[in-house]
Length: 250
Image (tube, rainbow, N blue to C red; front, side, top):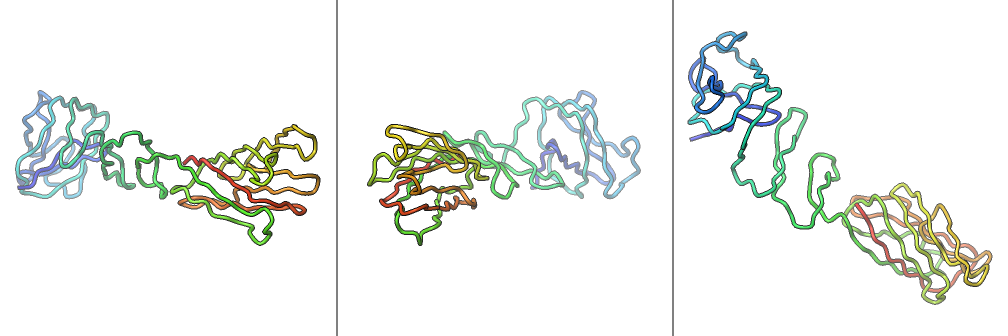
C-alpha cells in the first residue's frame, strides 16, 4: 500500500483518490480530507494542471489512504502548519532542503555533536563538519629546489593561521594569517636588523628574517577541495630547518 504526505514545503503533491476528483481540506481545516469533483476554476480531470491553495491553515496534518490514481501537482502559498511531522527514517534534527530548481526536497540527517553546518563543495546541499583542522610542515630553508608544498586539511580553507620558526635560529620566527585569496599579514622577529625588534609585514602569512638580504617566506598560492598550496621564496642564502604549524578554517 502506497502512502503520500501532502503537505511539503515548497512542493505539494496533490493526488487523485477517485476518478475525476481532487483532494482538498474540509471546511474545518482539519482531518479528515475530502474530495470534490470540480475545484473552482478547474476543468474536470485537467491532466498536468495546478491547483493553488492560498492562506490555508491546517492544524492536524496526516496521511491519506491507499492511492489508486495518478499524481497531480499543486502550489501553496502562505501555508501554516502546526505540529508537522515527517516520517520515514528521519532522525532527530534532520533538515529539509531543496535539491533542485524544481523544488524537490532532500533530508540532511540527524544532528552531529559539536559539528557546524556548511554548504558542500559543489554548492548543492548542506552538510555537517567540524570546519577546523591543524597541519604541520617542515621544510629546508637552504634547499632552493623546494618551492611549493601541499597542505592537507580535508576541506577547502577560507583562512589559515601560521606559526613559523627556523629551528636552527630561535630569533627567526613569525605569527601570521591569510585568507584563501592570499591576503595576508604577519608579525615577525626583526632581530636581524635590530636586536629584540618585531615588525608587522603585509602580503605573506609567514616571514623568517635572518639578516639584510637573507630571508625565507611563504604564501598561499592556491586552494583545493582538501587543502591548499604554499609557495616559498628565499632571498640570499638562508639556512636551517623551518617548521610551520597551521590552523585552517573552512
